[in-house]
Amino acid sequence: MKQILKPAVLALALGLSALSQAQTPAAPAAPAAPTAKQLAALCDGCAIVTATKSEKRKGKATAVGTAGGAVVGGVVGNKVGDGGVLATGVGAVAGAALGREIEKQVKRHRVWITTVTQRDGKTLTVEASADPGIKVGEVVRVEGDKVVKIAAASPAK
Image (tube, rainbow, N blue to C red):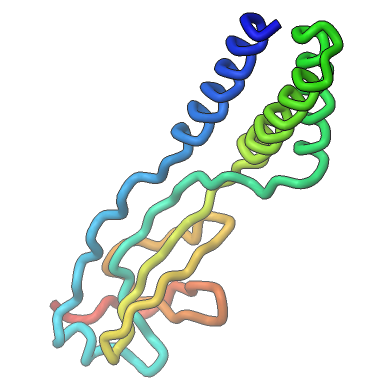
């Protein structure tokens, strides 16, 4: 029984490891710093976009993925361990962890991150669920949790 159970537990552990490594985000690039002249030319409430990027993020896990994984893992553990309680329990725990991770992967989504520098030199980062269509160097206004493009020309360089 132990000889059969070890490969199953190892396979589940490797599966979790591979899933967690697949979503390691890349290090963000250093934002471009606007000059003092550019900042001074900004209107009140305006800012200059210093960085934009998008990234995929894991979704939120719920009890559904955890419970589903536990049931499947328990059934597999029971079959592999010939009905043993220990094998069923280990399979259920490993299956719950794997089911939770799989649910996060299935629910992954893309976010757009915009970093801006305000007139006073402070930086803000705003996340959006859709592409805001804003580029580095553009003048924007931050309104709540949104970045809104200003129609006026960019500040002097």
